[in-house]
Length: 372
Ligand code: NAD
Image (cartoon, rainbow, N blue to C red; front, side, top):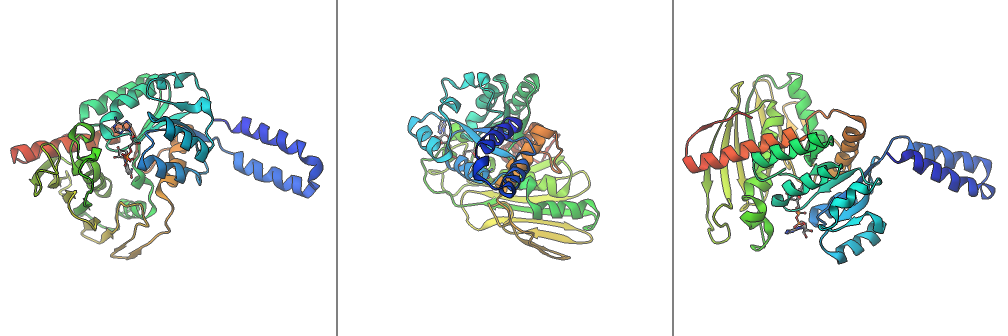
């Protein structure tokens, strides 16, 4: 969006420097500048400056198309620190009280919400009402009702809503989807998704139902749900689920420690998945068809993602997931590019519907029909 102005500024600066450069140096400089400013850049404000925001901000340093230009935080000291680390001007810094005035800031295109889950809904509504595109972290919200409201609000404000599904741009993942689409794996019959880690500090928001909306399923099990859908390439029509709780003190009412769940797909495939906050080394996706298989392990960590398949290893080169994601999301927002696997609000909502159905199936002990 700001490429033309950047270009003019850089040209003016370089023209001033002209007497100090050889003609060849000038031509080379100018060529570099044109290369660097060919495509518009997505100007991003990060909201909620915690662990993941730091990771996204660092990754954006290597992004060709997205740049961190602003922050939203309730902690003045953090804002100061981020301003120094990322060279962010005062005029692009907001707190949760004055955030709505971001509507008057023409230098920010998108707000990237990386606050705890329970705050996504309200933060996305506010960003949309301020006329900004929104990227929201997973899970998009606490329940399908909130998800629908977020989609509607963004539609009404004529802004895009994307969900931070970084795996949708990961090359080994896309390679499997490509093989399945081409029929190389044959008829898909089975998917297994194992997603978990052993969670530490019992006081963190991830173990607080009010802020997390649930437990492991909302946070890490969502990767297995999401992968079952993009690996099989269909939407599930039924779900069954069982919960296992070994530590009811750490994992209080409404905060699931471990859930196993099964999803049934219209073409006959079944997904069998495990979501847990109580086991390490649990990050594996396995897709089986009647002509071949593909396996990723690790499958959804920060990478490198690696695996094997009936036709050899899956080890396409690693690129920082969040860098690729931000480049691709810039293409989606600025150029209307269509990703291979969607990352829009409707995609986030489907996962929320499945999560709600899994929690329901745990409660009733029944296989539950599902329409996503
Ligand atoms: P975090 O605790 O490290 O950061 C959360 C930030 O939100 C903190 O800076 C905190 O100060 C701020 N915050 C604002 N209002 C708050 C409030 N009322 N209560 C508590 N904190 C508040 O958490 P995180 O690991 O960065 O996770 C943030 C979001 O990002 C979550 O939705 C999580 O699911 C998602 N996430 C996604 C990935 C991914 O790979 N896509 C990875 C990690 C986290």
